[in-house]
Image 1: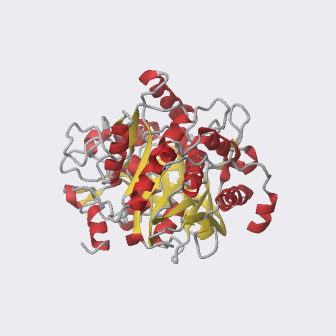
Image 2: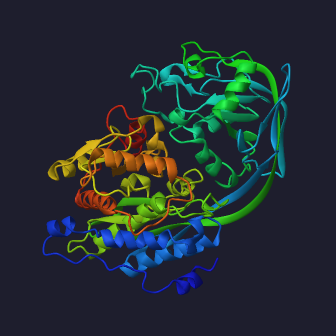
Image 3: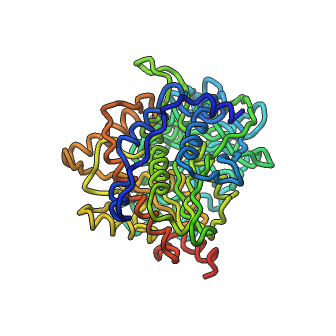
Length: 550
């Protein structure tokens, strides 16, 4: 890829004018972010010409060229030793499962159909993998959590076997808020963890049972997100330590399979009973997967404003630039996943914030770093790579302020803090909210595990205090019912679907609201000499304390 050529190809006139300077720092902060600018940025980033912004495609080339050109035009310095780009080496694995998944060992064989009943892929970098009459085991939630006294794999040898596990964790809807974290998902509930733990246990295959409520998304999202070409960070062992097969199956298919093996009723209730033991199904699964492998390099985009007093310390802003690319046409004939909300909105916000910092009368004392990361939709890969290959040391990174999928239904009277209760950055949000007459709320759907689902998580798990906020549900203009209806419409009809498109009718004042709050937090952090920390009880506190020499 010739990035310089891509700069030359960019159409002039796409840049948006920065906000006007004000007479005082307070006035400038109040009017720093322009809704029109955010909207214009989204119009470019969500255009069909960017081909759904999928890594390893021409859409990536155009996207990163545009973002870096905006940083350069605003006067920001390159963030990686003279470059606006950080190379992220990855492998693209295109998995094609056999048309049916065969279950044998019962009175009659069962066949499940690819896509409609199950999805399956592999990370292993080989031409083909297969499960040949692999014994099936129902392993409950697939969780090993010593701090909760829970081990679904206790006394179980799953080598060569395939485990069927439930999405989310045992605490969800169990009626006891002190069991795990009640309805608030822990990392043990995330699909990424299920795959990781099954591999640690030596399983040949792992299949997650999809259920819409505990997953917080429908089967169509699974179909769109877990099929076709998938990207992974390159590993020395070529991912041979992972399970041969990683997959999902519908609740209907799982219910049929488990009932055939004698397990009926509420499988979630069965799996969360104290003392649950994994249950061999006395059935075998056969499934083959062929692969196509492509090795290439994607890119994070990084720019900075050097601090005037403590340039070795930085405040980090993040947003992922990627989306799902081009897929099968939907009912309207649209095949491009433009990702206007997810996450052209976040990138537009950090570009606007970067321009606000650059035009501010008073320059930040700490460095401000803007990182637009790749491959979030593939498993938070770009942020994982940066966090494990940081350009600015993590123990000198004051905080990560992340923006992802900002609401397009206008400003709200409440501000939603993802994973509320985690760290002291929330206090900064609360201070601003109180001054503006706003309230703060936690996750709208705590069972969805939102704190583990965007790029801030990769910084949090390495100890960097990380904040992700979004619009609440109480619309300033139209009330709570309107806001809730718009949120539901997005989740049901646009999230990871082709209909997440730019429209002139988008109300981006809520995006501006979040961007302004994040700008004000970054301004305050940049002028402080202290470092925010994690609150007592956070699973990330010990890591940070150790990194900071506490």
